[in-house]
Length: 71
Image 1 (spheres, rainbow, N blue to C red):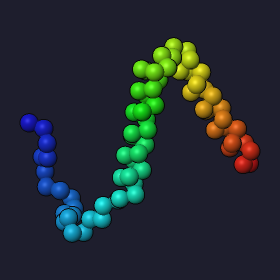
Image 2: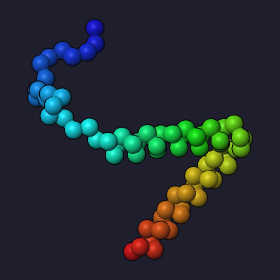
Image 3: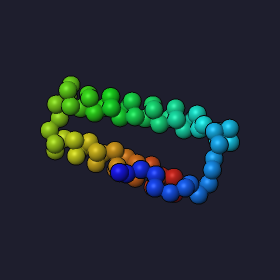
């Protein structure tokens, strides 16, 4: 059987834990947007694999350009 096989190193009680609300919200929104973009690419636009690679390369190039401009 897999699972916990020993005692925990630290015992953290729920009262000592602060839920990271902002990180959770950002993560959920990012996940929804990623899934939406994947849906649009797969079902609406019907991009070829080459077009997907080209689109990703454009995003990487634009990000690199912004970094160079900042320097």
